[in-house]
Length: 86
Image (cartoon, rainbow, N blue to C red; front, top):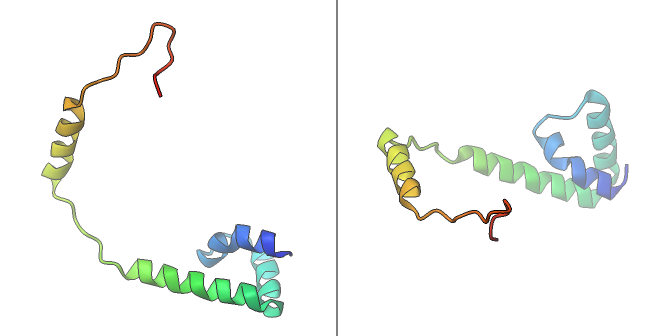
C-alpha cells in the first residue's frame, strides 16, 4: 500500500468501514510509516473531539419557520428552453 491509497482509505479505516483484508493492509502500512501513523493519530483525535460535541435538540417550530422563510423567497423563472440561470 502506498501513501495515496492510505490517505484515500484513512477515514473509512478510522470509522471501521473497511473489510478485514483492507484493514489489515492499513495496519501493516501504519507499522512501517511514521508519517501515516501521525495522520492516523490526528484523525483519531479529531473523531473523538467531534464525537464529544453535545447533540442539540432543535425545537420543531424551527423547521416550520425555516420552511416558511424559504417558501417566501422570490423564485427565479426558468427560461423556456429549460435551463436555469446560474
